[in-house]
Length: 283
Image (tube, rainbow, N blue to C red; front, top):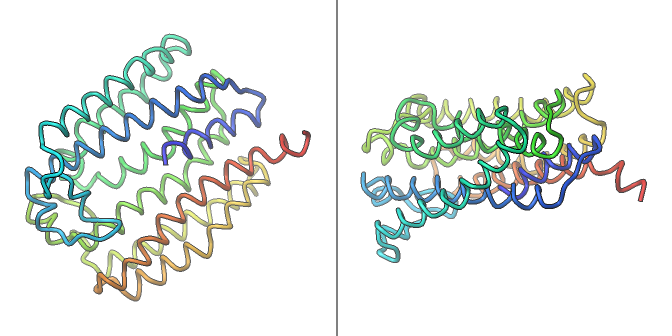
């Protein structure tokens, strides 16, 4: 996901005439290390609170089980997360010095999300929001800014659909874990809404994310090539239909969860291709 997010922001910059390969590679490394840190810290805290031990494991939810199974010790997980942050830190500092303090705001939000996601945001109904904000608009905008040293309305607009979809990846994956999350003091939207209503809300929000793609094109914010991202529709419809029909049956919900993740990945990929089409056609 880090690769696709950075690639989309970079493709948007390349579409506008800006591209530096070194900056692109450094951005991928920095974002990947940051995502590693938040994922491992989330696993660590879920192990400590017992969430992963109580949650039913699926291919897409229930934690990685590395800590629960004893394959990795908690101290090793903390060391890995800290090392990931230390690798990302100099890259972030380099870009802030190079491009100015405009990137500092993004860096502060990202760092805060890494440190406070599990113990704070996921306990006050903000987990999904910060997941979608960081692994969506902020990475895309930051990747564009690193290349272009500026911002565009289109880059903000193109990050909205992926941001929503990535938030919905977390959201749908939380539905099977409602009891486990609730018992550990987490507060998220599926817990508040209950499974049936959570599935209905998911369908509406995911539908809006898809509709936003042609809206951003018709309003002139993004190039027409980004309509390619509507290629996500088969996956999205499968996910929505599966969520509405099987919200109370974990085994039958698993294919919808997989399709939901595929929707986000395919959307990111096709949006990037849509930005690169004019460049490809000129070659």
